[in-house]
Image (cartoon, rainbow, N blue to C red):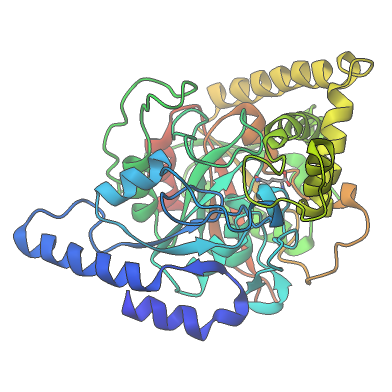
Length: 447
Ligand code: GLN
């Protein structure tokens, strides 16, 4: 803990943490030391973890990097925090992120952007940008993020670390500030597949507070380090043919396809007819759900209340106008629009149907192939401020991550080295629902 606290101080300019639990982490580490001596320590004894600032931890502030939650303290802990603590993890602080996890560059944070450790003029990725940089710059052992449409995997790729989104319904969302509930999943960001497996195992499994969870308990995951048998892998041919994908990202994909083939695996291109619908479907559904989830931030129940308010209406209006940032407001408006009476069928209901088709097509591919291999992002980390212009262009960067989110299948982003500018690149593996064991085994081999 002392070592990590030192690294956090040294790297304060990266802006990865919204708060460091300095004193408390030292005390907790001492207690874990005692338990190690007594032989009563849990599975995570020795692990120092940072959590994204949208994860509730009793008695600690939680802001989702929004002004509207400034000063709000959690009155209970999320299930995942309880499980991590029960296994003796030490939580060292809460990490910066895009406001309410809406974004892919961490530039939508009330606390300012997080800088990429590989190049401080560039973004960390997002929305779990602080969590990814905390691991990248060795400010903690591992970090916990949330992934709605790529927010664990994409910043992991931008920072050269591992980011894992499990099957939807595997990890409890109780005590996680909701963005889009039918997509939100908690996921670990680590430097090794073994740590990913361990954190997944500790956090996953039934929880009476989240009724979208599958009731089967999680079996312990021991990552197999032996060479796996011959696998069938599909890759999206558009990832290589689309002009929107960076040339070096394509090169890495080709390199891995060749390597896997040389090692005897079957690797085939596939067409995914719904590719153009992935991003629109995701953004219609995610904003619809967000507009409903964010209705609770009204200036009365939580956090910020406008000092200029003089009655109930103006409390709502002013607190929300002053408390939410630009991107969050845009999404609330978009979500409210697609849910409104005259447009519900044309947008929201239509998108639900397209989601079903995307899920079915993804399952069909994964019945034939063990894995889908695609880039995590079409480009490496871009310069801070470069994306100000058109939000739709920014949304399109999520093209490769939202498929797993729409289908609810597990996906992992793995670091595949740096490009010619020294910027990390990542590739993603998707697999069938609940096939985490095989995915993590193959990830270990893939690295
Ligand atoms: N970039 C996507 C969005 O802005 C994904 C965010 C996330 O996974 N939380 O919605």
